[in-house]
Length: 461
Image 1: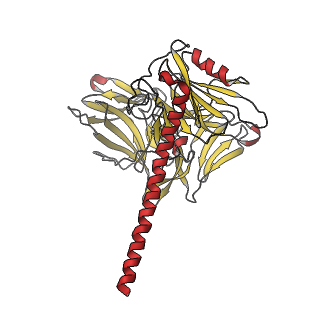
Image 2: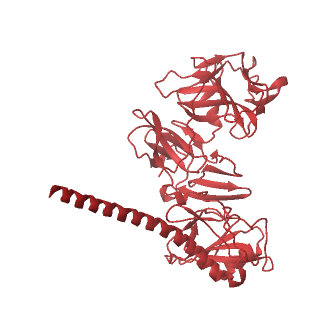
Image 3: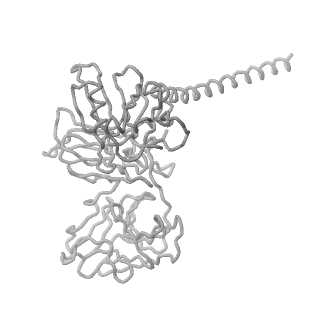
């Protein structure tokens, strides 16, 4: 199953140059449609590297987004967008989208009435040319090719071959129609994937060098993602699982999965050589809030028994805002359920009841995970969560208990025990139906096969 979502766009260039640099002064204007048209994308090719396909291109773009038109400068590798000036903050415009390289060396995006929506801030630095290099780095250089500005210093959701990212920097990606976003964080002791939602930040995957060695920077090589120390010594590597050279690393906008990509010449497309998460239920937003990702990689709501139970597709129906205290809320305990999110507030060596009460009394707590797994330390851990996502079904008897806070009276007169059994029953029934369908299909296949064999025997005799 493919767990990586990435946009592969067909470029329709309305105006183009077959060159790798532009000298000052320069100005290019794209017309913006008068009326909004869903899905509209208009691009003008600016620069192109002299490489075999797929090569790098830089383009000025006008795109329809949420009822408005955005104006941006973009870099592509083949048909894959690998850099965008509006990644963090879109520049919305009307009538015109203008790219200007001024006589004093400032690169700008402008709209009507000379409105500046984005700029490099390189005025007065003796900038001579805008250039796209064979590495995919978009740069402003002076007369002696000294770089004054470069796109590599402003990473988005893609890291190209040869590109370096220093510690304390990150890649980010933004799912559509969501207030949450993902990031790949380069930290001193690890690289991690994070889910950000409001003030809440949770990791859901990590890779650490051995022997607690510190990271100074990471770099994408042909055979994997390399981690380096402060002495420029390679201390670890995430290897590629394909013999073809890697071209880029990307953080999926929809899934939050991390992938290493190579180009498949015979298929004419990019494919994954490595992905951090290989199971759907390990993705942080595999299901909607208050949903459980089951063993069959399907989603089942954490339903609540009320006096008038409804089967809405909205798993969080009836749960909104912050509530706390035994007068407003209660805790529903779910066995056989865990959470992929880590690095939340944690308490150790406390009882399950204390863990439950901590979440109950904390108005910002939405759920708690209690772990009493026996091991070398036999440490009991209590994790508090500000949102209910990343929930997945696990085998019973693992020593993990997931507790969800709901409004008082949600469980009805039967209390939390029946809610717990009912939720797990729903998960079990759903997976059971999948198994029955598979077994039923196999049974039907063998019956039909046997009938055909009997018919063939009759015809032969």
